[in-house]
Length: 294
Image 1 (cartoon, rainbow, N blue to C red):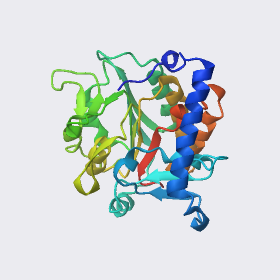
Image 2 (tube, rainbow, N blue to C red; image 1 turned 90 degrees about the horizontal axis):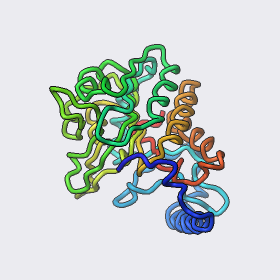
Image 3 (tube, helix red, strand yellow; image 1 turned 45 degrees about the vertical axis):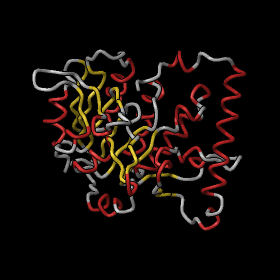
Image 4 (cartoon, one colour; image 1 turned 135 degrees about the horizontal axis):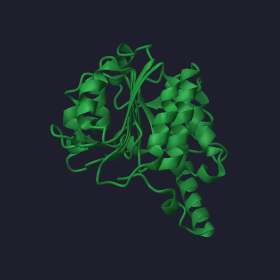
């Protein structure tokens, strides 16, 4: 899936938009009633760590609603692919957040990502060290060879999830003489990300994984966790280019102010939700913090 141009998402009538919103709200309330309502009286925290099961791995928990508020209005939320990942994420937790390497709008056969470059230019100001690669310089070879030296690795690219062969899912980068420009899950397993504090996958469907036997997940997030990062900021569906750029700027600003990753994401989602043109969950809800929430 590709970034969805704003013009395409807005090419419906007001009536159709309201019908869509009402249907979404009904499902959000139904899921809240089935999963959260019975537990909420016992919740004594504003920070939720959710371990989904089966198809729930594809659910945006931030959108569940009691009819008055979304979950994002009340809680900061992070997701673990399995309960066993919690110890792994905590053990790999790192305080460093000084250095950034970012890849944006690579030269490909896909639609150019107008706001991805602006996104990279904006977020690099939050770091004392930054290497920013765009267009023909945003190569797969550089992603493989340089990412091991940085605390934060940010991809503002196209992403593709392969349901039939999830190990073939990947991020689209610029190809060169050594690599085809498609950084796939099976290649990510071989990367060394022991210095990484966070990997941000500002692309489409990067949080989607195939659920196999025993609730085993195969997808981009599994690859990056295996490679060494404790946290991944990823997406559940095709995202809008412009609104994603706004959310990412707010997320990094919040995080560098001292918020936890999950709280920084929550505040960025709320800020985007308050903008009339981006108030629908389509724009702010696909983003999930996976792994270490701190």
